[in-house]
Each structure stands twice: as C-alpha cells, then as structure tokens.
Length: 188
View 1 (cartoon, rainbow, N blue to C red):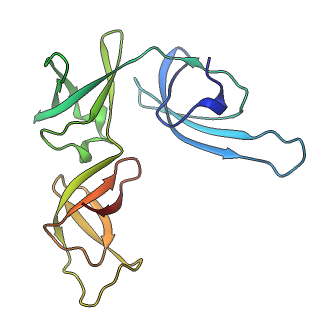
View 2 (view 1 turned 180 degrees about the vertical axis):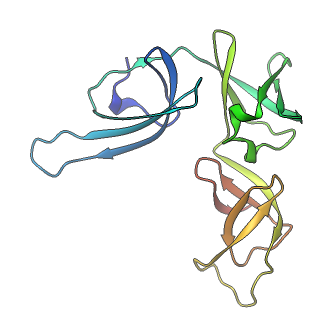
C-alpha cells in the first residue's frame, strides 16, 4: 500500500471504494521540534468528478486502485460527444464533453500523447500530456521595443483557449502551454 509520502500528482487510489486521482499535493513541515510533516492532498473522484481534500501524515496508507492506462488519439467531436481511437487495437470509444470539460480546451483533432484511464473495461477519464503546442490565432499587436519583461497580454489559441503571453508574441506564432496550470511556458 502506498503511503501519503510516496504519492505524487497523477497517482490513483481508492477512497470510499471509488477511484480518485491526486490532483494537487502540498507538504507542510512544522518548525516545532518533533513535528511531523503534513501532506495536504486534493483528490478528484474519477466517476463523480467531485473534489476530496485531505490532510494527513506521511505514514498514512492509501489503497491502490487497479487501473489500466492506454495510449489514445483524439479523433473528432460529434456534437457533445468526443471520439477517441485506441492506438493499440484501433478501436474507438466516446466520452461526453461534460466528462472532460477541464481537458476540452487542450484537445485538437489528431492529438496524440493522451492516456485514458480504464477500470473494469469502463473508461473513467483522460490524462493529457503535461505540455502541448498551440498556434496563437489572435492577440493584440506587439508593442515596439517590448522586452521579455513580466508584462503580458491575452492571446486566443486555435481551440478558443485564452492564455496570458508575453507582449512580444504575435499572431501566427506557436507556443507551449502547460496543461496542468493553463499557463504559457515558451515559444515552440
């Protein structure tokens, strides 16, 4: 059984008999002598999509959840249904847009590097790659003499996602975006 101190972002455990994925992890180390480190964990139920926040010590055990991870490709959208293709056996499966609403702004037709989480043959959710590349389709013109300073402007990407980018970027450039935070990382 994994302990709280062994968990990392993306770990899947069973809480109350249902699969939960670890979304966020913060470690607090008290300054007092003898104080044990506290782990603040934010889990998301893969079935109901509800958050479950817990604070525990590093020795607390968690029950591992038996899941399969398979590589898939996002094929296309058909109304409110998203169609994915399994890259091992080329079978197709679908998910409702509401089931992946947090991941939807990062999905582009033909996108690979996506993993699907399955339990007992049932698709629970998808995992995106940590970094994806997008083309900037609309943003304010760059300011003459702008540097790589901390000033930013909003930029609309090909999927409709809006991210803050440095002032020197222009429409038509390709950028890297962190899917965990939704923030600009760098030019491609």
